[in-house]
Length: 239
Ligand SMILES: [Fe+2]
Image (cartoon, rainbow, N blue to C red; front, side, top):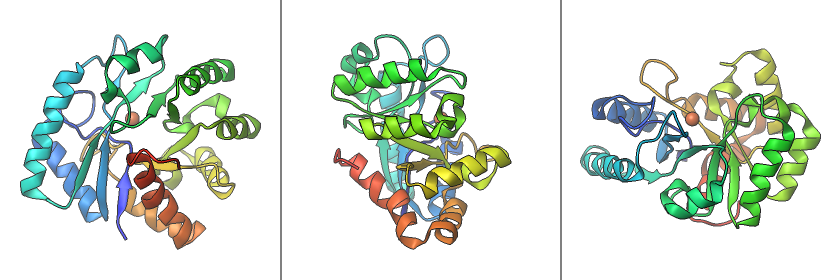
């Protein structure tokens, strides 16, 4: 069984992730060794911080795809974006479809850790009305989402929850690990990403996470989170 990584900063020289093509290829080789065959590249876009043009992002993506076709031909790469919440998201998304995930209606959105539930609700609500499918990036990071009732309300409204593999494994402390475990057990997690940035820190870790999920939740649930749901999302189908 092969896995997908749906959140990472492997696309080189476009944000605070991989700083060279060499590092990007090394990170993809790490992913490959961990059983990953599908990688969704999600460089940051945040006004005032990460504003690499989509043209440059697409060119880098094409370069990386060409290299990987030689290096590891059975690795599938997709282009997306980790979009920091901002005003008028709809207008930005309309301006260039590559802000969405692999040309689908799914959008990976990042909030401020301290954003209020109201802010998050308003933002995803606008996206839903416009026909998008919001995916909340590393949902374990936000204070407002530590409220199970709010999580339920979001999920029931059509919002998807992405969790970081490192947080599941305990890299962000016991309380975050405990929260992740609760959400996983209650079935509120749809997608898992490594959020990998480099080869030596914040590294690809889908493999160890898969092992952990197999032990904790069983083979079937691991497959749903790391293979089936990513496949459905990248095909533009409903998860
Ligand atoms: Fe990220």
